[in-house]
Amino acid sequence: MMKMETVKIKTAEYNDDALIRKLKSNPKALQAYINYIAKEFDKDRNLDVFLGCLKVAIMASRGTATNISKTAKIDRSGIYKALSNNTKPRIDTFLNILRGVGLDIKIKTAD
Image (cartoon, rainbow, N blue to C red; front, side, top):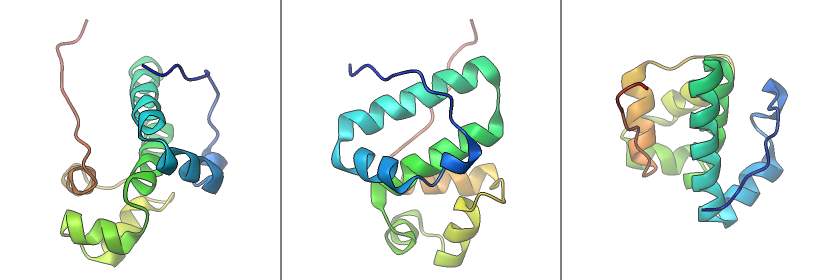
């Protein structure tokens, strides 16, 4: 598994185009990034940072709202709204988007 540096992620970095390009070009880095943000969320429970980082992962997975809307079966305006930094999407919307880009969430027993 690829090691990722521990980095504090700021709200302004959610839509970092350089990060999205890097993750798009390296599927292993994308998977490591997703695992990293899930572990960080498990520690700090910061939902804003978690959702922002997942939005980056989603954009890196499929790229455009049009592509995501086709696979998630949600209209483009709904995708834009759900992925904007000003909203917290409903869980069913977010799960549809995740599944639409080939991602899923696993639930496990708490430690």
